[in-house]
Amino acid sequence: MYAFEYHRPTSVKEAASLAGQAEDMKFLAGGHTLLPTMKLRLAGPSNLIDLGQIAELRGIERSGDTITIGAMMKHAEVASSAEVKQAIPALAEMAELIGDPHVRNRGTIGGSIANNDPSADYPAACLALNATIITNQRKIAADDFFQGIFTTALEEGEIITQVSFKIPSQAAYAKFRNPASRYALVGVFVAKHADGARVAVTGAGSNGVFRVPEMEQALSGNFAPEALDGIAVSQDEMNSDIHADAAYRAHLVGVMARRAVQAASARG
Amino acid sequence: MTTVSLTVNGQSVTADVDPRTLLVQFLRENLRLTGTHVGCDTSQCGACVVHLNGQAVKSCTTLAVQANASVVTTIEGIAEGGDLHPMQAAFREHHGLQCGYCTPGMIMSAIDIVNRKGNALDEQTIRAELEGNLCRCTGYHNIVKAVAAGAQAMAQAPVQQAAE
Ligand SMILES: Cc1cc2nc3c(=O)[nH]c(=O)nc-3n(C[C@H](O)[C@H](O)[C@H](O)COP(=O)(O)OP(=O)(O)OC[C@H]3O[C@@H](n4cnc5c(N)ncnc54)[C@H](O)[C@@H]3O)c2cc1C
Ligand code: FES
Ligand code: FES
Image (cartoon, rainbow over the protein chains, first blue to last red):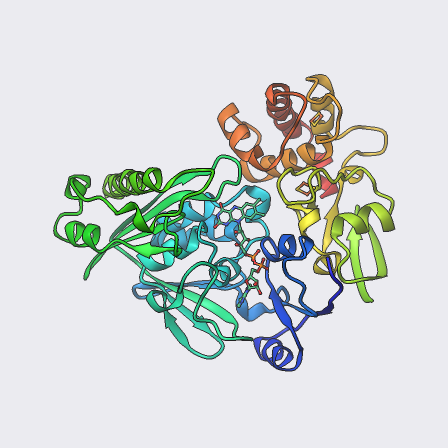
């Protein structure tokens, strides 16, 4: 790991002002992506701004038809939150499927979303649950936020403060885990909202997380696994690597989507 | 250098560290607590698991400065004087180790599982919860048995959990 200067602000304002002054800086959340990357010297920021002591980045709150989660909430905290389990059980279950218990005790929702790993789970939840990413500067719809592998709408020095999810009437996440890394080989999050269904896929796309309009249309008419019969995603835009080729991933998208709809319907 | 103050196994520690010092390096090299191991250094194996404010974390993927003002418990901090912690005793009794490299992490993870899931653990739960801990020797079977027995023994010896 290259040397860096370490900063520990206690408010978002202080963190933003440090970010404005510090050259070549990165925010540090749970560190479970950033620190391994720094160890490999794939990242070598001169300044590291630790968001870990900022109380305003924590908390989970339900209001009306949304549930809002602070950026520094850990995966384990979301997985075990009574509010989340009650409002969107599928979201708590998704958080419980991230990595292993130790990863869930450190990794955060804000870090996962800012990172936008093509195999990460939260980006799929954000798209399917029509989330709004709230930063210290603005509110960004999830549909506009994720812009391709490891790429987001965030500007340099912009801090995610909260993520606000729309509470669906039914939802589920089906994940086919890479057995070694535990990231999603393919993960499909489906949700039924008052204004239609949403289907979001992670792990599969060569350009990162994406929605499947054909499936959404079919499920908006009839939210049942049979509605997906005959709908296939094209393998042209699927990721292909040593773990699975494009055809296999395309097939898995269909399988996982059906399983997710089945699980969502079974929950009632 | 950055100053870091924390409590490790019940003792307060303050030191000036290079901010890139990992928590595991700090424990092993500054404090000479070499029971916590580094297996992979890539966040995969769990040999480095310690408790940070009562929760199991990989200390190879945590900076020492991130543990400022926190309470850390390592494998050295769980026995009571000369008496092994019930989970340690169960690993010995059930032959839950061969080379022992993964064992400190396994035991710290196992105690964390009991803290979260209670004392009656079935095999499936134990195997799923040990997902972040790799063992190259045992084939896991005796580890699973040891965790189940240790979990039950912890119910009978609640005093020993006070070390947290
Ligand atoms: C063994 C292992 C298994 C894993 N398995 C999975 C898995 O199955 N599924 C999955 O989804 N993930 C998985 N992860 C990744 C894990 O969820 C990470 O914790 C997560 O991707 C990043 O979150 P973090 O809090 O650790 O962020 P960090 O590593 O601290 O930061 C990541 C990036 O986000 C930026 N950032 C962080 N917070 C903010 C913020 N509030 N505002 C703006 N920018 C910010 C940082 O500057 C950095 O660039 C795994 C990780 C490991 C080590
Ligand atoms: S040494 Fe930390 S996970 Fe392997
Ligand atoms: S006993 Fe040797 S690695 Fe587990």
